[in-house]
Figure 1 (tube, rainbow, N blue to C red):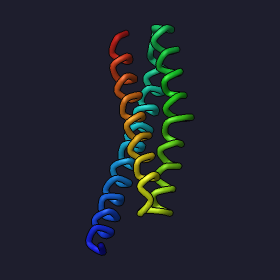
Figure 2 (cartoon, one colour; figure 1 turned 135 degrees about the vertical axis):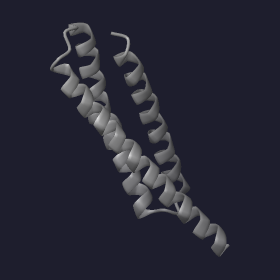
Figure 3 (cartoon, rainbow, N blue to C red; figure 1 turned 60 degrees about the vertical axis):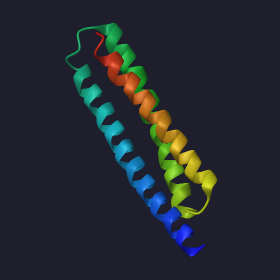
Figure 4 (cartoon, one colour; figure 1 turned 135 degrees about the horizontal axis):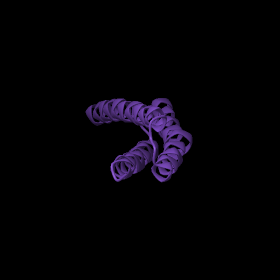
Length: 105
């Protein structure tokens, strides 16, 4: 039983580190899009980028941070681990769509 608990904690730490890196990369993506907006001459694409930046910065990243905090407080709680996996997957999907749409204009 002890080895299973240690393995779960190790998995939790790896998951937390991965989510932290993903949130950091998403933040960098938002920052780069904001800087690019200064030279973007297409108002349609800039509007889309701004809306996607707001979604990532105001909704997605805070949910990842909240889920990370829950797993730090309760690393043995499988529900908090599942929530962290879920919100991180959501973030990855949104950022992938964000990256794709930014190249369309």
